[in-house]
Image (cartoon, rainbow, N blue to C red):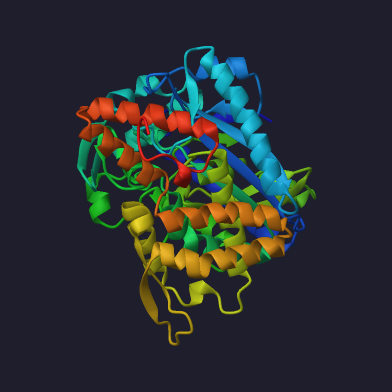
Length: 501
């Protein structure tokens, strides 16, 4: 069965047919849920990392096609920008020494990719936003050579009807415009997948939403954008603005952006898929030959091509995923909160923190989302993105009654409440205690030193400025030193303070 692109630049009739197909997919999903056809729990986790390519001078390298040709592995694929790659790690069972196993696989895989990139005078960089990226790099000519990216760009630009405005005020203010979605390519992330049963999906998703701010606070790694120091984690505001299909009048009317935190706690995965269809018009007019309802009637399992494709163009920070493996459907929560890097050890520490936390919180008898208003969770996320490890978060007061909240420094919340929960969650998964302690110890170290990737980058940059370098050279030397230390594998809170130290 082949994919078909709806012709004619997707006119009204084509849009109506495509939406009708999406509604059929949604109905098929509802039937699958009702018939309890989903895979049994297997404690499977998955990991994807988006990467940058940069030369020895620290500047972005537009060579992903050449690097992929040399890597010659199905584990790697293109991402939106020509300076991006993505690596996918096969799913693992979340138990035993899985964290150390994943760390070793990642080190081996990334070292190989880095060597291949060096053959074209480039290198692999794990970082949220490459500090040396400038707005002139983020143009449609630097989108990866893939028909789907070109189509996505064309449809989003057409829906927008005017240039994209990037306006972010943080330590400094950045304002610029873009004619394409290319600025989105600046954002490189770690995506953590967890397969869950339909009955547990809501608890896991709600837990992931509740702790997204804490993830950002300890893991921020994107303080620079187009030569300006903005938020400690600048990916979310950039992502919101660079994918925004709403003209200003629709924004003023309260129409939701395609990148969003959400607006409520949920009771089922179906609610998220239904919201995606109700709130967001399709932007990729690609249809498959499959008739999902007929497949169900014949006893088969539909792939739900249109639904999964549409779902991939709504950029939730915790995204619902439908998939089929060996003829059996399954659901996953895809956590898209974290930036890439700084090192494999840091990535695995963030991974341990997340999987431990969601397991513990999802099983609490009095769940945190029953005590934390959703709007507060969204405000926490915003505060963590702005201020990183120095953020103040609102959280249910320990032992409090009646939904009492307190404003607490993120580091104190993590050290006193969330790290013990994460440790208990990893124990519940059956993770090896030595793995648990090693990687959660990295998160503890960041909190005690109040240092993560973002604070290290900012400190290194300001030290370079103090030495008399101009902005451009300070960002370049910071990036080069970051790359040197990244390759040592030592966690970022142990790194020397700045360039040359």
